[in-house]
Length: 294
Ligand code: NDP
Image (cartoon, rainbow, N blue to C red):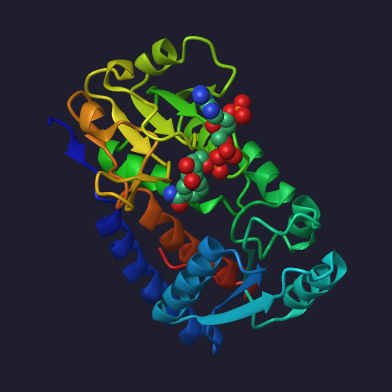
């Protein structure tokens, strides 16, 4: 193995400590704690785990956590009413509606109802637009976390060739926008891309956000490239009846060729919540008209 391991867990712990300091500074200036509201509809087990973990992390950072759990058969109008109430609540700085929503709900409509200034997930079209034109807004947490890891590892990204595999609104597209803003030359690959291996081979930076276990192979990678693996895939483990998590990158093989790589777990995953907390604090400072400490 030649690649350096990018320790997202350690980076995220550090970021969370900084968020804690920001939260204390906010409380001292605003006379109240920053608040993050999380709305969960239904009983999806993975979503329940995420929401519990977000709530716990929010409290640990010294913020208020407001959890709204609604039954799976909640009418869309009732969910929209909850979101409107949170929009109007001055104790709530950030609002996150846990996705996916039950099938009878229109996710885009729900996201569009969140005030863009409380949209700490950065999914509202206003925030997508702000990112595209370079205005301050909220950037989706996972790609922003990936960018932080890349800048920490590589410093100035200007002029580097970046290939993002995946074009979802929550990872691939905002990742590409962030890398364009860093003056990378960006290629976005997806399921219709021809000769994907050759496309990836050009890249100094590879971000894999596909959802296909260990798809990116060692012979796709330019020697020394930096590889960020966003994928979280649960697959059967060697031991009968057990499962394990793997990324979208064939870690063992790619680590022989890459210059640096994020592991799964312990790479991008821990960054997502840390960035969410940071986004919530940024929202709090902005909502109170306060400058964010440097
Ligand atoms: P989506 O399913 O929304 O998007 C997947 C993308 O991969 C699509 O653009 C799709 O192309 C592309 N794709 C699918 N198959 C191929 C293929 N064979 N070759 C090239 N491209 C392909 O997924 P997300 O963006 O939401 O998530 C991606 C991965 O990241 C998942 O494993 C998810 O679990 C993980 N994730 C991890 C997070 C974290 O905190 N670490 C947070 C969010 C996601 P097309 O558009 O043409 O269909």
